[in-house]
Picture (cartoon, rainbow, N blue to C red):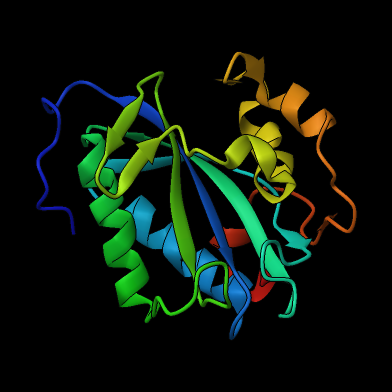
Length: 181
């Protein structure tokens, strides 16, 4: 899938991604997105959090979301990994209509190694991830010691308002089996 340029073919970076959705069958859509990521020759899914059901954030008059986080290893540059994520969203029929509104799938690049990026359409680390329990709760399962703005993900998660966030899978293998979601 990825015709986008790898960094050098040998260098691998750890990247964290956040996935979510609240339209259609979000667990099945997210599982498909994870399988598409893992099928890319320049990306390897290394760890996936449990799947969580979460209250809507920002725009609260909509259905609850499903969220998870994933750790991938990649040789792609930051812009290229973003483009792969956006292409997967397009393949899965994501339509961008309303900020914080309902969506079939959303794939956010949260971190890219310890790199900071601030470009048009790409900010890494994700500028609001430390404020959002729906990101922090699953992220702490796969990257508890990751440092964001001087604090570990586990510390940010500990201090976040996780009211209503509940796991709906027993482990991070939920995405591998179509019958599990």
